[in-house]
Image (cartoon, rainbow, N blue to C red; front, top):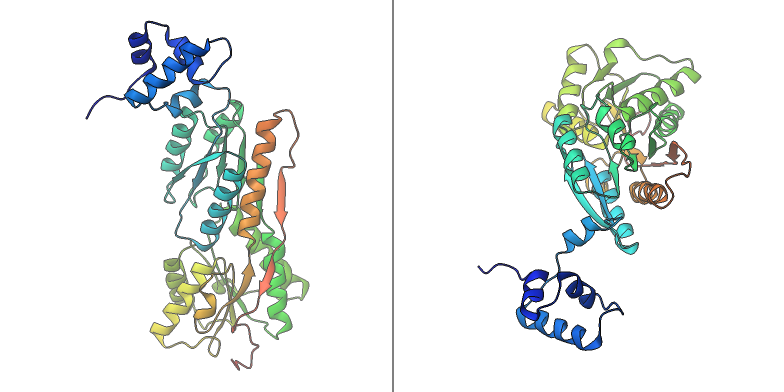
Length: 342
């Protein structure tokens, strides 16, 4: 395979400087018409292709955004990523995406790689294991704009865009209480992750407002995946009789509960009912469809990008640190009331 043609190759053939070739290819007026025509003709003959990466790296801005997410096989993140790509393209920005696979060390390495590529800014949704914030502080101190979305780092002065997790959880539990439920269980995520904290807080807030309190053996913490729903239901069963209704921290966790219940011969919503924070485009195809919180994933993605571009365009501008995007309840075939009439 032949080596790509360079500016120096064209300059050598024509007996002019590399700078003159570069200016001619860009159509700058200080290069004569005859020289420009010779450069363009030879570039075409030799099959010259500009080195886009080199051009970006030599410019003040690369017009690229680094995007780091914990996974892509996820209903919320898939929609958010899609919206970010579309919005970035409309504003003449390119996205370089990296997936951390819920690995905090890999997340750090991805961020270092993106910084070495001189991206103009970073959009990050952290892993479920992220506790060390030093790499993020370094990003900001180095002058690279940074915005967190969905899973965020709180109380460190970072710009964070997320669902109204606490309010959404509270509204959903309130909805269940109004259906007549008094015995609640919760299968939550990792304690250190912001969405776990706020959704649990909203869960407890709604119960407390009605003088209700969950039994200690009805609270199980784990993660955010389908397997955590499997193990969460098993643990609830090991610890005693099931509550009337379970609030799952994410849709995948709720789906895990639903699938495990089928294996065990437990009927939902008849034997135990189920709600969750999150939704899926396939929810209506599942029996029973799960009542839960609809997150505006596309809106969150676009807003996160917008706030990042504000920082890129105006580094001195103060950006609101914490933005909670309103959510709504998506009513399915669960959460039907203690009578268990689906």
